[in-house]
Length: 262
Image (cartoon, rainbow, N blue to C red; front, side, top):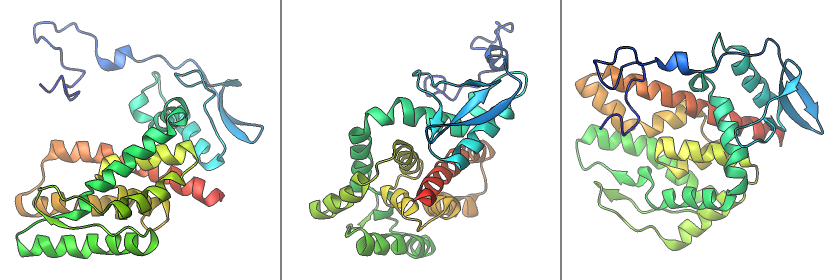
């Protein structure tokens, strides 16, 4: 089951008797370049490896009209050792997704974010214990109050996991703000934040500069942090959470950098 879910350690053979199965690292492509630079081409910054532009898996130039983002992306390529490991290149993966996938499916991605608002995590509250109820209220209510004021989106709360239908007019108003996102990388990043947190409200609050990566992440993990405080840390789960936060911080960085450009 863990293999199906993509959680199998790639360094552990599928069959313990097949100890000669190649490790994941040995199957990664070797680094084929020495110098990593940025080049400005018609207002877009491209990564150049030994002077040659990099292309995405979809054959688009690996380019974004934002220098801070591309500087961070170039640093990922420069930091590669003997082999190139995509798992250590979150900005590259994010930009690839934006250019190859999101750019041609903007409406579908917008609609997916809007659907999250219909079942937003912030709306589903614990019935007990009192301290968890209070933590949820103190952390989540300000986000929902902001959404009501800034986005004209008033959402209905529920206790437990029983689905509650949200007002159509509120979802429509929220959708208006999602549809206003025009840059494919901003939209890709907002989708990453939405899926990692389970909250479209949190994602749009980042887009509007209301929450940074750390605050957004903390809001998304109120329940998990409460459980950790009660029962202790699961170290494997902590490792997975740390890996997800890298993607979260990368997406928030891209949103902020593109917003700063104006």
